[in-house]
Length: 229
Image 1 (cartoon, rainbow, N blue to C red):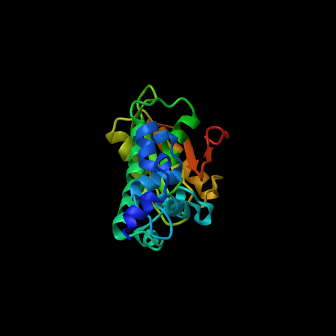
Image 2 (tube, rainbow, N blue to C red):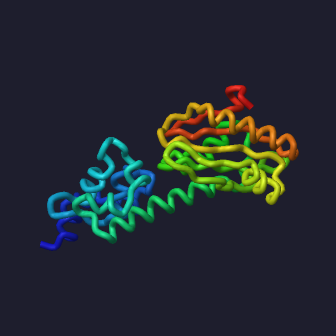
């Protein structure tokens, strides 16, 4: 029996993800149905929606299993070939890149604005990334620059790299942002020391540090909100 025909016919016509998407719109599909559209076929034992549900349900992580996946991890699922694994990797990467498009012509009026810009991209990182949001005189976002990538629980940041980006891009002020791969967002002693060091450097150069945002798993910590900057 042809696996493709089997997996398509095993789903009622009105419930087939691709047909639902075309008829009712992508926003009406569940996460597993959206993944099913990408994968297209399942196996003889389970249709493509069931396969997608199995991937999403592992460890209760849902879409994190896609965002944090690797070629090897995806191929460990029965029914995922090299081609399907590559498709899932492409989906994960393009979603991260698309999330950065939201920074265009956005004005930062609160810590929440900054967190929203960076959350979906940085919450899934397995290493600690340190980035800065570069702002103009009206607090409009000019650019987001990556300063360093560290290990599981630390990143190496030096004032010269931070403020080089700010000077080159003629930024009036900046917002510091880094993530905690653990998912927690409380600042460490090192985070506080680094923030104070960069704040003092910014005062000398005339470039204000408006905030330092720590990104956790769906949560964030704002130094400004907590009166630490």
